[in-house]
Image 1: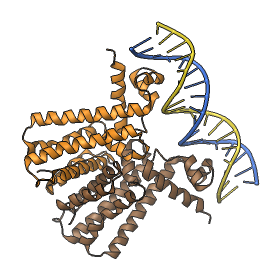
Image 2: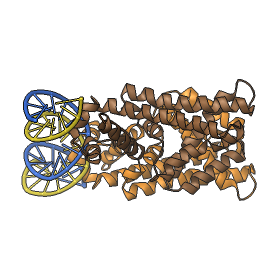
Image 3: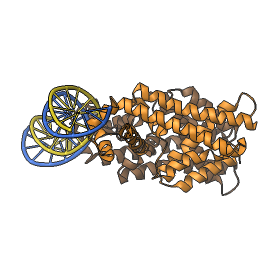
Image 4: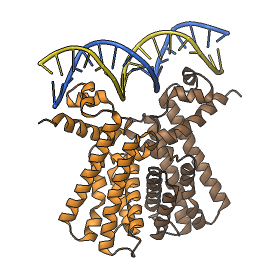
Amino acid sequence: MSSSSREAILAAAKRTAQAHGYAGLNFRDLADEVGIKAASIYYHFPSKADLGAAVARRYWEDTASALESMLAETSDPVRCLRRYPEVFRKALATGNRMCLCSFMAAEYDDLPEAVKQEVQAFADVNVAWLSRLLSAAALVSDGESEQRARAIFAAVAGAQLIARSRSDIALYDSLIDSYRAVALLPA
Amino acid sequence: MSSSSREAILAAAKRTAQAHGYAGLNFRDLADEVGIKAASIYYHFPSKADLGAAVARRYWEDTASALESMLAETSDPVRCLRRYPEVFRKALATGNRMCLCSFMAAEYDDLPEAVKQEVQAFADVNVAWLSRLLSAAALVSDGESEQRARAIFAAVAGAQLIARSRSDIALYDSLIDSYRAVALLPA
DNA sequence: ACCTGAACACCGTTCAAGT
DNA sequence: ACCTGAACACCGTTCAAGT
């Protein structure tokens, strides 16, 4: 395969960025994982900014299709909304990792412009999906589904961040339960 | 003053860490800001881990006294809880900065043990204060105030993170409004 | 097309020396 | 007590050069 190195770099970079952020991405370690030299990565990605943008873009594309799959499996919008926190839970369950875009949100000041745009696209994908389902479920009054969608997205991202800081996935579950208890998310 | 350098280092490190995280702290830039040489910082802090821990400790101490001041000003627990988001708002209003401990929560994997402990102490301070006020306000049934306190803390931290990623303090305000609308926070 | 060696700039840290 | 110059080891990044 002509693009196997490129794909391997993207996959390794995604895993690293979920645990160490954009700043924690380094070409020597990345190259070691893939089995090439650090300088070779520059053949596939002209700069760290390009790699970062490609990783973040791939990340929201993957999330978008995971959300669509979920909708295909669970067509009832209320049951589908209930399952939304699974997406963020998975990262914690995989080596206490977190959402790449939440990490990058913290690193905002140090992000190249192209990476910032992909981070925003990730948020947009999540908010659009949530908003669509909230409307379909008629859980909020018309015209408020987008604001509610943003609140859910922010609260879930916060729960993941706090749970990660204690390496405690049970804390994540408990926070999500609290959100359900106040009906931020459907119970 | 014998400790003016030490204090200046702590203040500069706090500002930097709120924008660039623990990884973004570097002794040369820090020294430039303070007007001494990088090597001189080691006279005051034996290592970067020690500086990081001192900064995070000072950060939660300052937050603890800000919360106590707020309580002294606004003794009504419900009104005081309403004002809680002001604490996180202030960082955004100061150069789109964020909570040092939220940033460090993301950087968890790369934090020295002593720093991790201070980050947890920050969360503990916030949760304890919120829990105390929730009980005093009798806003949640007995025995649930701590869980609710954690939910508020996580949701507010998430709102700050998302608002920062768009440099949009109005988004923060709107997210807090949404939390109030679902009564996660008192309206 | 794909990869590498060698170099550059930077950073955390140390230490002997200065006042 | 407080600070500095100079150096060391290391790492992210770049680029001209290899096949």
